[in-house]
Image 1: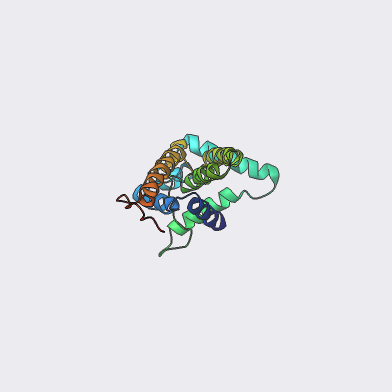
Image 2: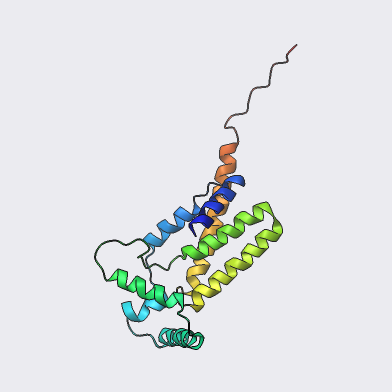
Length: 178
């Protein structure tokens, strides 16, 4: 994910964008704290619908005979939440979804380079959104808010970049040289 972040910042710079969107998404995640459905029972109260989702994920894990990374990671985050101090990767936040925001940002940057790449990464962003809901990491609205904010910030950042590239005052005409 770090490599992808560096890649997208470079794409954004190549397209004349600032590359600050991932950092703004992290700030919004801090300002709008929320926990996804996979944490509802542990943090708030039992929830039949989300408990059923968790049971289906456990059944899928049992059927494949292979551990489901999402379940292990969710357990690790709950353990980190109960410990003292800060842990790298130990935060629980859902609104807006930074994962969904980054996927949308990748698509926006790709559209600047190539239409086919843009559509491919837009499909990827859709799959990330569906997966984040299916695995219980996010409510559907978390990804939708992330996509809307990312698209809006992309547009605003583009306008600011365009404005900064234009001279504030018209340049005087050049003197003719002999």
